[in-house]
Length: 435
Image (cartoon, rainbow, N blue to C red):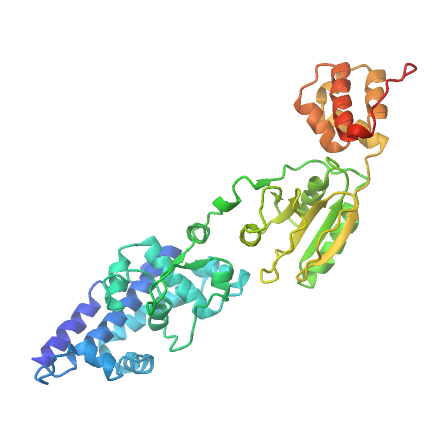
């Protein structure tokens, strides 16, 4: 009777297995991860069933067979691994697990390997992430997780479960200081004393592994794409690009402190340099970030930059926050500083300061023509008066253009207002009767 029961369970363990290796190769990444986790959970279930069936039915014990197996120390990682190597019951499962791993080692798993490389995850950490990913994509696996963890409420991934599924032995995979936790790729929820912490993958990471880069809700209202604009000829784009290239070739992050007055084009300069490396640029406004929120916002901004291979330009009134040392910054970043503004040094990056020069007369003339196309129809003398009288920065001329001046006179009024606002109480422009 015992042999028949064993054969029946072995037959059950083979149901639903995929015989067509070519079909596995055609699966998507998420389908492959799901398949791998299903196969490994099935194999673990067969092992637990083996422990229960192998216990003598006429032992006279009032304890459940699985409880006895746990108490007498038979459910150990070493015993489980040895049984997998020799048991015919799980041979088909072992073969399919090997097939899935082989496919994931190719192009199908490139996104997962890139994630591991970007955040320096160990193989056990990547496998823990897959355990969390599978139940996030297919919540029905929670019932299986609960069965394997022998508790109806444990319908979630845990470090202990991942260790048993992926043969990690007794090695600790999860800690608050591991990269998965530091970068919030996986987060742990509170658990009662003695209970393993429930682990869950960030939905943004699920989307990224599916090929979609999403903005973190925490960053909503703080980050925005910097619109590409033409750089001024006097800007040191070429020399700064060379300097950044030398730093990145040494695999050392670089932080460029771009100083200049408001509206001088500091963010545009940053996006221009980043574009030389084929990178998109996001600006991050620090003005509304509190000291309490700063570490989390900083981490999420860096994570966005790493995942999106983009540059960041930090600006606003809170550039004085110190960059957390436990978060490795993205390779290329900028800080839009005011003139003579001092920011705390960063221990994880090389700082270079660039003083952005003011536009020349010819550059201001070109900016008016490029940003305010209607100026081409204005009288030349009046346009030259605008260019020479109002020493506007690129951002100022953009502000004038956004107001849609209908004439040179109206543009001059807008320029006067901007200049008066900048001077504040220090002074005001006086019209020259001889202009």
